[in-house]
Length: 216
Image 1 (cartoon, rainbow, N blue to C red):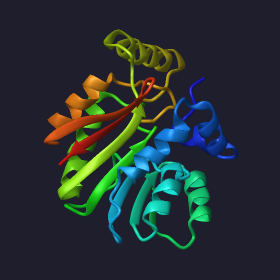
Image 2 (image 1 turned 90 degrees about the vertical axis):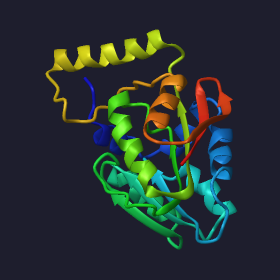
Image 3 (image 1 turned 120 degrees about the vertical axis):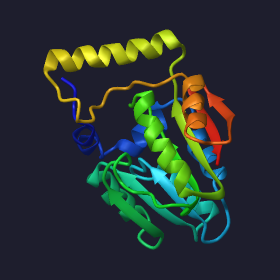
Image 4 (image 1 turned 135 degrees about the vertical axis):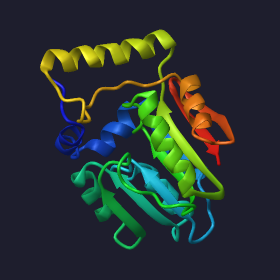
């Protein structure tokens, strides 16, 4: 049976960091690379969507120890681990859904998300990305590192399979369940541009994982 997103990550918080670093292709490189893409000005304000235990922040705070980070995640256990890692850093951690939490207007120099957004439909992401676009300062940008479907056929298959499972298990459409439904990288770029980002660049690739930079 599908697990609710919060339950899935709560059950796996112990050993999560080692699993991600050891079992995800390119992870030892893409967390560092993602962090290097973020602003290095002291006091830079960064929004982290689906921050989890802060694997990207481990690298970011090495480069910019005086940054201010707002992290949003559904799983309290993950945020508790993140707090333990960085007790002295300027961290504002919010336990909630980044689809529901307000971001403010022109509040951040940059935003980042790593391996979090491959669970949602294009329509769901559009609203999120519009809100994110509005939360960035005029010269702000969004760094997205995530994995993507290899083809439109696979993308459609992922979403079809998820809906079949939900129907068979009688699951609510109002809950988030842990089941990967990545878009193609081309469709992800389309959504970001439709949300208002002026330019979206492919920066680097590790098999099916890409880092994208979306400029406000």
